[in-house]
Amino acid sequence: MSNNLVYRIMQNEDVEEVIQLFAECFAHREPICKYLDAIESSFTRPMTLECAKEPISFVCEDTSLPKGEQEFELLKDKFDSISVNENSAALKYLINKLKHEWLYNDHPDLANDASKMKKILNLFALGVKSTHANLGIATKLLTVSLNHAKSLGYELAFVIASAEITQHLFSKKLGFKQTFVLPYKDAELKGRKFLAGIEKPPHLI
Image 1 (cartoon, rainbow, N blue to C red):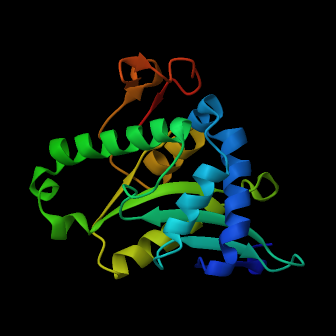
Image 2: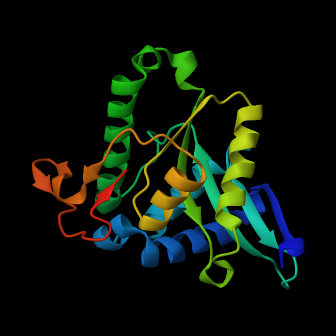
């Protein structure tokens, strides 16, 4: 099958399929979105459309299938301008909060420098269909997209790994530096522990 897999930059014509795969993968496998019921068109569509504006997100297409089956990696420099609904806003809030803390704790020299901030990449979403699991697609997709981003001048990559499989992928396979551990029971929004019901995994990194 590996000979039929093509890794390429996401194009506008890929958007609808990526939106559908985004929703399917995260609704069943991503703990925060499952718990908040945050995966719907008002979330997946604007996120995917925003990422499609720049040539840094990648898809993997299986060319042996009639229309091609795609896996995806969505990347963006920032998501502040994206409008989402209330449940999705909680997720957006968490992403921005953790990135802010990471910047000021680990890279204070970058936090107030707009030109340097543009060189930080957010790895936002990664999805592989269950029919294509355990083929090394996620690792290859990330490696290809990160190398491409580096060639464009990006110097740092920030990711929040919320599921067990992505935590293993980033920390063990790709060697990302772990800079924080946030137990789900301690995540707060307006004084409310809004992720306290998530038990597996017990935390995000």
